[in-house]
Image 1: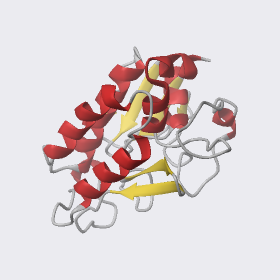
Image 2: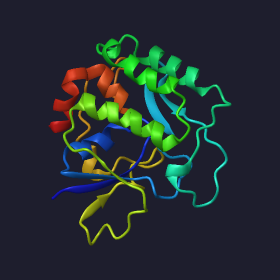
Image 3: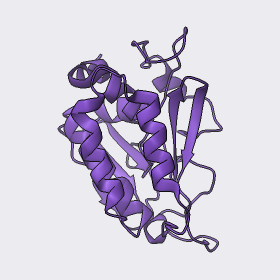
Length: 205
């Protein structure tokens, strides 16, 4: 059985879902220690000026604090910034009108915990991508992945690291809104808004 272990990301990158689509069991660890400057609170979209990181501000964290306890900082006006940036980047994408409002509604509910917010977005993405494997949410830190034959992506799918070798070949070009050359491994919303109903076929190839 192909098993993978992910952290819980904010609109995960395409490689995250390529791994998911090829696995029979998907575990998501929210009991792990929260890591700053990771995809846990950021996503990367493609704009007319190139790649742009959208970052969710969080309240002050303690060392070795579990991801599931991290609180979003709504004193900062990040929601309007993120939604405006997404609209500007993808408003002319072929499938933007089909999916944006469902994502927008989640932002407007102002969910207190980062993990709960990310999970709601992830649930909508999974529905759109028609992924049959529901993720198993792990409240306690997952250890001993080698003996359980679990491929651990928690620290390898990271904005400051190259795409893992085993996933790089999965990131085939598709038509994006901006850019003369293909920008691989953007946020999953790049694939969803550009490919829509064909996104599942892209992941399955």
